[in-house]
Image (tube, rainbow, N blue to C red; front, top):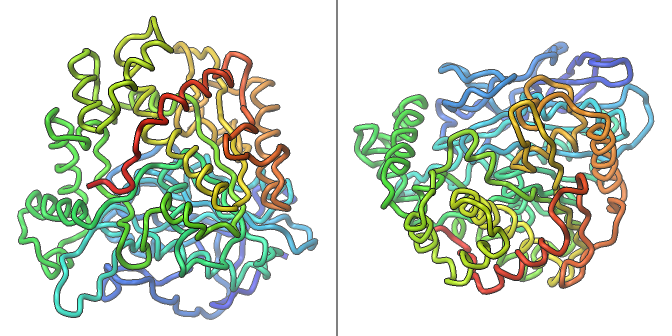
Length: 500
């Protein structure tokens, strides 16, 4: 049977393969525009008859155009939709894996080929992916006014609404609402970390898979400064009324101009290097504290956590041109100063990379600062607070048609989803997959399925020194000893819990 009854009405899916049914574009909240714009997600209006759910829903407003995924068009409003992949057999109830896509809180969607849930569903889990508000729509700060109805972190509120839909409806698809794993990568992983410590999300999932957790949250002061700059770039007064009246594409274009201004100004501080101007705002609304502090305080100790990062995260950001070029010693020194890094850090990396050019040293430090070390610290804080935590690193490398292929940001996700043959992922993995790649993918996918099923990915949880870490990849990947040396270099670095 390819139809299911949700609380809002019947849906009809399709079979991408004979043993899996996919239901695409199911609304989980009302369109967040018109009277609903910049507000908490509102309930869906129920429908009559059977709703065909064979195509992905519209993506959130953004300027990005990603390979294999649809682009946003002004007028696309029903963006709060989700997708379900389920085995066609009637067995169950099955564990559920809910995926939050990444994209710097600014771009991306659940329609990306990397996130097709077919292979995971065939392995025995129900897979849910969804879209949520991005950029200013989801994370922009609205100036306060008398009785302002516009909450912070609307993108996180959308994610909670999607999880509530799963709680209330996933039984109809063969899923177990008491056995939900929340997974994400990059800003999606950071979102999951935020939801781990958010009271409104408590009880909606029991496990988290977090790949390449993006650091850190924004302060309310930084969020307000971003809004001022966006309003100035849009040529409108910085008031809630004018921002609410501005068309989404106007705020997107203004945001892009602000990003470009940071990119062009080497003396604009930390935002010059990778100007991500939106993100969760901590200390207000539903997010009362940053994830590192709240996790250390034990706010999520009842949640099992599986953390992964890649070993060369920032090589991707350099390859696609979204990171500033740092090629001289003076530029590297300014970079270290802008981020308040300890004096020993750059010399320490030079010692570990004696023949590397300045650019590679910068990319190694920045990747660890933004993703790897932050991910490791989240895992450690969770363990120290009494949580059960597993750690892994993705170190797979190979030679591709255009040269060396790094273990860079996003490369691990097609392996874990089992989606290595999509044309759009060839750039990430360096060409068509090899037999070894398929074997690695099966191991990573099975680890996700096992963790989602019973909380055991196939290796031991870490202790306080992160001694039990699974390395995914080939023998020429990052060695355990070098990984330990890099961690040691960071021991003197105080991570900012908020971007000031």
